[in-house]
Image (cartoon, rainbow, N blue to C red):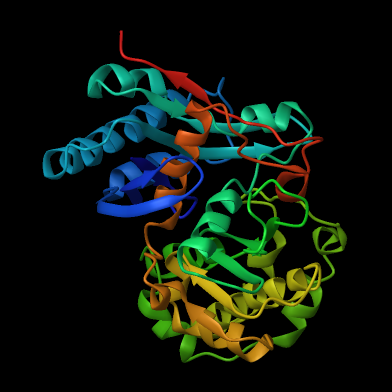
Length: 360
């Protein structure tokens, strides 16, 4: 079983995957548990904070509690899980500085659930000079082979931050040279959600309806694309709060225009990112909450030359892909296999990350 609480902080996804860490045999049941408003506010108060900050323990307990609840519920429905992949909640990510911080203790979950838990997936990669993100690319490679893809394609996840994986399914292993290239593209849902919360007191623009009614303010995009991040060669990664000036850029716009402009910025960042791919992908498969935002999808299709499809059209589950990924990665960690490589995180050599905690 794998779990994911993303940077959008809407709740915890849990999913079962049958795999040997190489091939995906089958996908199993899934479950979702939302954070309530108080829990979400407590988590938001810990954003940007590190392990030693007094705000963090309370937020970490919420992360552990909600994970425990959704995992226990899914285990009641299907008790097949033999191993748990627990990502935790990212509060800070500074791979060239203080490192990376995912809150939540895997040993606590191992004790309460009676399952071995793989957690702290990112620290080993960062410790060896990698970005520590994105970590989903090896799973994307397995997914491409699972759906029978026969030409290079790209997986785009639109969470709080966008990340992309270019995959050549002709390569047998994800850490083979030329099999994967991955990096964060730029802000995705986070600035839209933050604007909705700040201006309208709502957690998101449902379906992108308000953004669709707005117009794009082009000067904001032009300024946005001058950010130094877009000139860096991947692999590269972002923290949720790495573009603080973006919200200032839309501050004078109406809510619909601001949202549409932020959606256009996210799409423009993806278009800029695709310039780094070894060859143009034959299609772009979109997962994560952002694919439900019609304005985001409209902007992507307007700016990209290849087909842009909701990943659900392939039979994969775009809402659960990252939870499934950490189930897959947990098996790789438990079996001593690699989880990242120079072309996915910039680490010096392919490395397996993660700590395995067993119930006493």
